[in-house]
Image 1 (tube, one colour):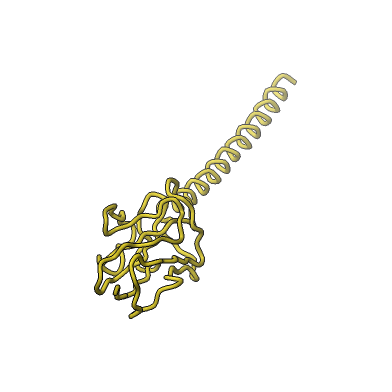
Image 2 (cartoon, helix red, strand yellow):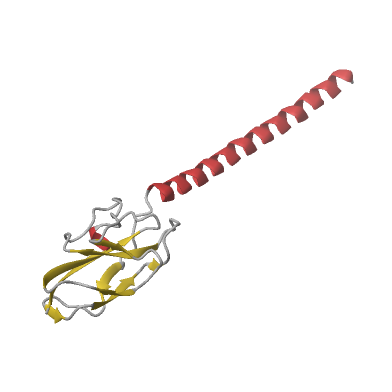
Length: 161
């Protein structure tokens, strides 16, 4: 009888230990999958919706303007939010004045007189531009000013009278 009790106790202990071990493996797998998902999202917040685009709402190529130039910035497929936090599907505008077509993806947008930041989430502005031809590039970037690249950029050539 004593041996049966020991055997039964060992059997129950073994079953509980196995059950606990299975749970640990399961929890570990679940945690690992969750961690992988989080890491993936953190590694590539630049995966954009297929319909995402930015555009100048009120400007067209070749348009003649007077200074200050009113600029209205548009975006589809993304949400405009103030800078500060990196959240998937969000960002804010920048305008490059006579500095090329776009900032390469994941590159910080410089902050100077030719790279104008709209980190407050603004979607319109007035630009004081000298008379002559100007290339304006609209660049969308994440909460810490990393460019979404060519996919979320637009350019327009205008002439200021």
